Length: 265
Image (cartoon, rainbow, N blue to C red):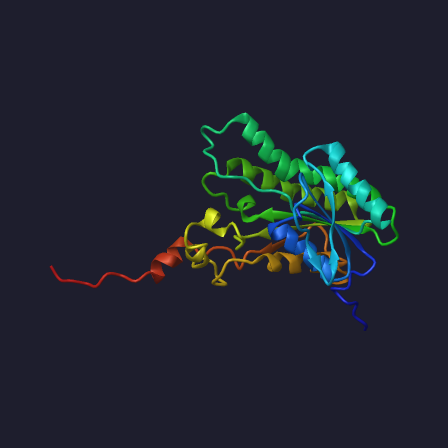
């Protein structure tokens, strides 16, 4: 049996939404390193674009919450590269907000970015991919919040839960030409770690992860390479957990905690 190279994306074309910074930029760089042509998007072009091996990603200004703009992004990539093989729906996120007082406009914007936008871009990508002999792959970047909501994340958690449901629905409808999969990402150490996890940059959070550390962006990027590659050719509608094992249950943390010394009355 001969095995295809799981990280050879030469001659393939990839879109990474939100690919100008953070996790998205590392995903884009991973595909570039694997030989792919990559287009990233954002509302404004950054000073530097993801690059690897002397090649840089192309940029297309896009607000992916706008269906027309989302379709334009896919059209631009298909025109530039002559094909589209992989879409990574990475754009997303939300600041914490109190569900009791949050405004309807805030909720609408969070749901639009984290659920509607991936739908819009995937719809356009499917139209291109299904006409190719090799088909294509869509990867939706989700969050542990879809499975285990935290305080302050009501709108975000609901949208990410919807993204997981959307993944499974599209996987049913679009196979076998287009595979659609989901990554459940846990806490990730990025440049914004202090803002997200406190002054220790996530050290305390890492203590409740079985792997003993937060994820780093390349952990998610490697998962994308696998899901998009030939070794995952039969993987469709899957939810790949990239969260280091989740969270150690509170009862176990309490059992491990040092107890105060016993003193007789």
